[in-house]
Length: 242
Image 1 (cartoon, rainbow, N blue to C red):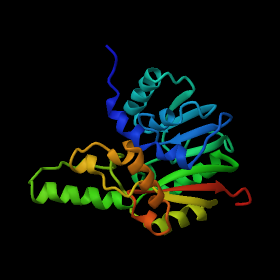
Image 2 (image 1 turned 90 degrees about the vertical axis):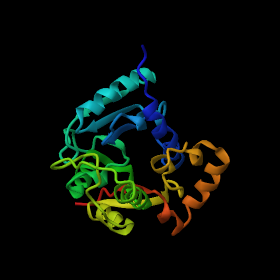
Image 3 (image 1 turned 135 degrees about the vertical axis):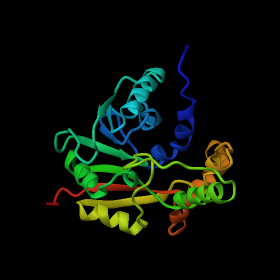
């Protein structure tokens, strides 16, 4: 019986914005930092030479490997490791993808330093930073706890599945620039709240091409883009940085 990967479908649907904003080419060796179950490898299928995904959770990597077989992808490899100290050579990768990761780590500067080390000179990186997403999900959690009286059990110690870092967009960008990256461009992911989390609604703001086109337009506008669920940024490595 074929394994059901329907839980990835939502990530694949919302992931259509990444190739629209950040291009890969078929000569690129790409690193996916905090790759999880590998949705970026599927989203960018056929657009890279090889992609390597690194994650600290072995269970997610095993799911990713099975998902690659199910989606017919044979140029994606997984590496179990801590993104704060990655087991890769310096100046190795052409491009780096960092989706929904940096806010989960304990030492974001270490992760940024490692990404700067492993990417080639003038290589480009796409990274997402949480914006309004946390506001929406925190509100939903507050309603669940205080109105619906739902119990929530916290995991002791560091939990890789929750957000540990809370900076505004200017602080995130400055952190990247301080570690040797040059800002290129940015946009919001979507201006729609995460209705799929709050109410379980289908993600029509991505699946309907007309709504997606309008959302896309406004998500790229100055100031308005900061009202998106996340801010998607592209940076270039500054090869003159020491």
